Every structure is written in C-alpha cells, then in structure tokens.
Length: 524
Ligand code: AHR
View: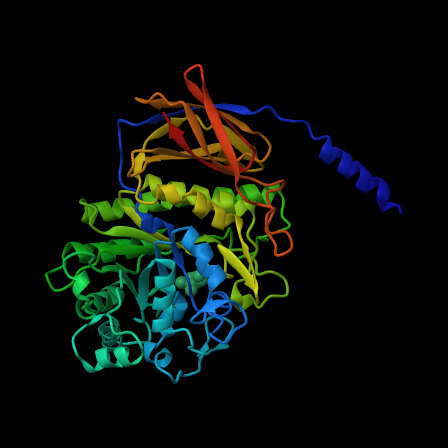
C-alpha cells in the first residue's frame, strides 16, 4: 500500500514530461559530387555454429513440424530475403578454426564437440550442402572461412575442390553423389579467423606465412569464377586499437605490398564489437539513458578505428585494391539471465537499431576502403536480426534498420553537410544527429537521418543542391523507450512507420522523432 503514491507520482511525471521543442537542423545534399559506391557487401551477415544461431535458428531438419524447405526454416528464409542479404559468413568465428568439413557431408555425419561455445555437441547435420542450400534460398553469396588454426592447407584446398570443380575428380564425384552436380560458387574466402587469438594465437609474421600458403593453394575451380566474379580472399586483420593491432595491419599489408604472382589477398578483415568493457556486462534490456549514451559513445569510436587502420593500408596499398572487411561487428552485452553464457543470448532494443544505423553510416563514409561488413550474428546470437523459439520468430529493431537501408546497397555515396549539434548525458557528448545520402542506380536520391537524442525531436530542413526537391517519403523507426524491444508476445513494439515531407518555400521539412532512424527517398 505504501508504494502506491510513489507509483502514481512516477506515472504522472512520465505523462506530464515537458515536450522539448524540436531542434532545427539544416541539411544539404550535394548531388554534383558523387563519392564511392556503397558496396552491398557492407550489409553482410554472420552465422556461426554457436548456441541457436544455426540449429533451431536456421536448421530444424526436414522432419520438423516447423514449415521448412529441406530442413531450413521458411519463416527465416522469407525474412532474410526481404532484407536482401548480400553474403553470409560461415561456419565461424572461432568455430571455423576447429571445423573439419568432411564431418558434415554425406549420409553419415560425425558428432563432434563445440568447445568454444558452451562445450555442447555438434551434430554436423548442417554442413556444406545445407549452408549452400540456405544461401541459395535467400539469394545471398557464400562467405566461407577455412580452418587455418587446426586444419591444413590440404584440407582447405580439398574443400574448395569439392565445392567448386566441375572436372570429374573423385571429390567432384563425391559432391555429385551427395546431391549437387553443379559446382558451387564461393564468392568470399576467409583465410582463418582471429588467428591472433582463438584462431591459434599466432604472431603477425607466423600468420603471414600461413596466409601466403593458403592463398596459393586454396583455389576456386568454378569455371564461372575464373575471369569474372572471382573469389575474394580475406586475410585476418586487426581486432582493435593500439600497437598490437596496428602492428598486425602493418605486417599483413607490408607482405601484400611485396606479394608476387603466386599469391594475393583482396581484403583484410577487422573485428570490432561495441562492448564497453570485457567481459561484456552492459544489459541488453532494462537499461536507462546512461547505458544508452555510453554504448553509443563507444560505438562511434569505430570511425577512428577504421580511419587509423585505413591510413596504414593506404601506405602499402594507395590504390585501395585491398578492401577492409569489418566482418564481425555489433553490440555485445551480458548474457540474458538464465541463458547458457556460452550461447551469447541477448535482447535487441531500439538502442541497437540506432547503433546499427551509426555503424552503417560510418562504413558508408569509408566506402572507398570498407567494402564488406558482417554483423554478428544473424539469428539468436549477439546483435541478431531474428530471434526464434521453437516455431516462434520475431524480427528485431536491428532487422528493420537493415530493411530500411536496402536502397543504399550498391548506391553511390553523395556528400551531405549539416550541423549536428550535441546531445550530452553524463560524460557522453554525441553528435545529436547523423546522416548519409546516396544515389541509386535509377538516379533516385536516398537520405538516412539518425536522431540520437532521446528527448528532442529534429526539424530537418533539407536542401538538395542541383535539384528541385518537391517531396520526400519513406519510413521512420522509433519506440517509447531506448530499451524498447520486440518480443514474441508484442512483436510490433519497434517497427517502421511511414514518414513524408513536402516542400515549403523551396525546402523540404522533415519532422523527426527523438531516438529515431529514418530513411526517405527524395522526389523532384
Ligand atoms: O561472434 C562471436 C565470436 O567473437 C566469434 O566466434 C569470434 O570470431 C569473435 O571473438
């Protein structure tokens, strides 16, 4: 009974919170200065054999009551098709350096262990054929990471021969016998994963000697991938800031500069999680403004990290032939209470949607060098697009950001200028708004604006230089609280809603909600 008046006071305060006037932001897009192409591969996904990322999240088996096509969930495939996933990185992660492909092909699968992630058994029922079927159903490219840590160049080169040759070798015949006569396409090849740590704790020099061997011998034989659509080889790159990581980038890029005809790399990977502190301790739900502003402050450090490693790459590769692939990124928080800590289960809130938008914008601004990125991880693990529980599936706020950003895939970056102003909370001072613009293949302009401020809306006055913009329309994503989430019970708490603007006095005025992500196309 005593708590009652307190509850009433809190409710009244919440309802009566003063409306803060929208901040005016003048924003102009200069259509006459197109930049680099925003490679669709920056919208890539990552699916590791970890927790329920693969088993239950993708694979339920052909005998499951959950509607599936050859064992792969139809609801998940439908949702991923809608966000036009460009590529999926698989089978890990740390798992990749303990993965032996032969154990998961053919009618008899070997049951192994997954010591990295919960020490559970690995049924190996989802292997090469199932993964390729999955990417095929979605319309994505395969990004396969080979085992450098506990495998051999021979094992990896035989895997590629098994997958890609159309010549009548014994391995090709085995693939045909296992149900796939046509050679598979492997668009991207990861040469190990975090070889500086879970991938074998190698020094940069040791890794470089391995990288050269794998680059030389792990060949793609698919006839369709010889001249065009060649497989890109991605080397292990840095995992953070500071001398350990700049030294790693220096060593790999210096080797690249001196490379001979016999080996090559096309990309350098970077792993960059927004954690705050190790071990991950920030809550993924049930947090307030302090945790919101802190996590976003940490995530904005990604820009400096990319700038510093890009500068090293520029030194050895001024023509930017080697792409930077941020092939693991996202928020990594404390495991949800009651979950297996090895399964990396967390909720996904409006904060994650904003985090995703800020990172995608950073990648787009570095589009000349960042030509690939894979959010970790696609389903049920870390900053997921999709959460499942048996037959149930829910789409996360992050999923909707990826959906809203589809028009930016392969669009041309166009500079946008604005005075963001500042949102401050505690020791966090963040640009209040963030924005990117791009022109798609049909000549249409797209604008993304993130309003980071959780209290104040933004009145955006949009001027498109060189264009008589008459209207803008698209979608905006927000929710009542920074930690609002979609659940199986309430799946539509954080979903995009339509937004539009008309010209007033030669300018377009867009009214943005606090803590929101907005994507509009501009019509003339
Ligand atoms: O995504 C989870 C893990 O994070 C990956 O397996 C590893 O590469 C990274 O440390």
